Amino acid sequence: MTDSLVQSLVDFFKSWLSPEIIVFLISLLPILELRGGLIAASLLGIPWSVAFPLCVIGNMLPIPFILLFIRKIFDFIKRTNFLKMRKLVEKLDAKAEKKSKGMNNLSFWGLFAFVAIPLPGTGAWTGSLVANVLNVKLKHSFPIIFAGVVTAGLIMSFLAYFIPSLF
Image (cartoon, rainbow, N blue to C red; front, side, top):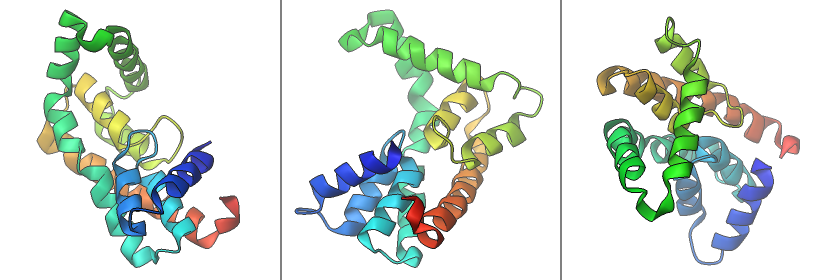
């Protein structure tokens, strides 16, 4: 599913944005994140040495804001049902709570593994939600999430650039 979504986004944007901007934007998006950005970069023929830092920066850019403000935003939405998003927020909260089970004792390594292993439903965005549920402070969670993103990037680089027949 990820590869078809990435291909659709690439096809949509390629006539009016540079390949590098497309990759950066895809890396910013929840769900696709760095994984989708590296697949897009491979499809667009962007050299790995350019694509990797673009994807890491794109994926990490929203993370401090998520870590700092997501709880306040979620609480506001739950209180006011802003834009009728209460059910969505409750669902995201429940998902983060479920993903955080079993990580309490090993929260740092668990958070790292959760972000680093490039599977559907994992990544920096969800990892930030999990860190928030676990009450891991920004100064501790950001470096762990960054290390996880870099690790996921190395894994995805291998898959997208050295075994391109997968995508």
